[in-house]
Image (cartoon, rainbow, N blue to C red):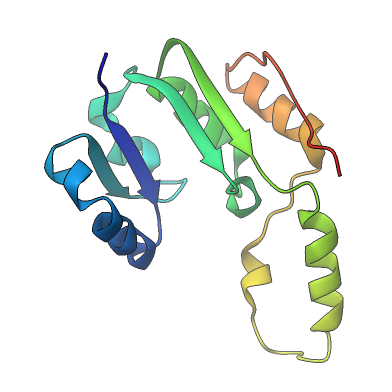
Length: 144
């Protein structure tokens, strides 16, 4: 069975690189690229409600302000029995803490770190997903 991959990102520059890399797949309509943030994703994909077999969130949860809202969006986009796969670095909180401490001397300069919204581990992520109507099946933490 053939399907379509939908790639969504709020960064237009990243999407342009993606379009270059996967031009053939996009031209053959095996891939769709959508510029959308977590706040606009559901609206931008409104014609795809209930059509996704799987959603992959790869290293993105630390950018999301409203996990419940994002997971509610996922729940609306998924087919019954669909899956959400989430991957993120276990070490991200420590890395950001170290980076923040190192930059304390640069008071007044906004950094990319200002946009991070740290998730308090797997439990908070699981709670937000379940509150949005997603059912947890399996949670795995990579070994250090």
